[in-house]
Length: 490
Image (cartoon, rainbow, N blue to C red; front, top):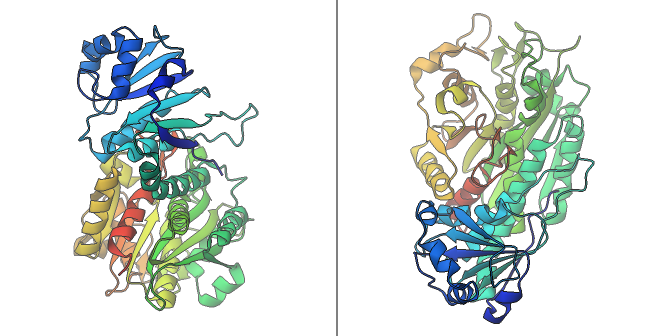
């Protein structure tokens, strides 16, 4: 697994500033050298720091952005990077400041001087998040960032604040690695094996194979994968950090390791990105890893349905009728609307077996949600205002875009089938909403539930604030915060 960049916290040594090599990144507030380290650097550079702080370039920077003085006079360092960040900065601004430093990491020595900044731990977290690099399949030597020294007034205090953030970073990295992996590497077998390895963290992992799924009646899920050589599976991950006997909170993820569309095959252009169609399962896995690493005091169960949607002589056809675990029959209108078939059975199984206090599912479910919200927000659908509001609050606090979408009887009526109970696809108009209504048919009325359509946020073609191009790990931070604030100690 890709590892977060190593961050070391130590006290500010003013006498050592002149001899520091590589890059010095200085957190700056205002147009004058305010901290002791800033004043020392200003003296060493013969006032260059003050001139830079009072320049138009610095004034035009937004919080978290930076400018650079190359080969500054009076210092051994190759560069002095000035990062604009007020002492009263928000959490997101502090993370952006760290990310600004990470963008310039090149393997050399880096010292980030945050001195007594109250958000030093958040700055370090932003740096670690943006320094992610997926290079597992490149022949060249993988990029090495080395350790970053973060100079602060109280290293022990900041390190303690940063410890749970390190667990979140590792969970995000685990999700990003899974989503970035090609499908010939991340088969259903390999995916399940990576999840099984988390037993060493204290997570109870159970893998349900096809014969077990058939006995349970999961014919909707099995129908999706019947055209693939990779066996379909459901992986159940239980973290028992709460009170014994308390019902868990459930996370359910769509894990289509590759989606050709099946017989309703997708266009060739862009199909290579369908390696990310297991993004929902990847987020569930990342959250479970984070909970275990930080020893969360909550009972949480994560369930993922792992399949591959391929066309061959055994593949499911448009017009087929399958019976779900719930007993609801489904007319398959479009085999490319496969994720909801997977989730239907896993959602029902989660409720029947675990009787959860609440449930959230994640899926790269529809292109329609990208048309509606672009790549800035995940679509949120829910049957429960309290759970939905709590999630939206958590997502906003973590800077992960999320927007609640409507649901209503008019959309639900579109699911009616001529020959079965419901259809799996209702056409283009309101496509993300009718998909949510399909899933709603497999959620019990008494179970608070949210559906997160992450098709637009799981993987990006350009850099985002805290991630390079590719998998983002969207949702790990928000769900971890939701569980921490709503379910721990309850």
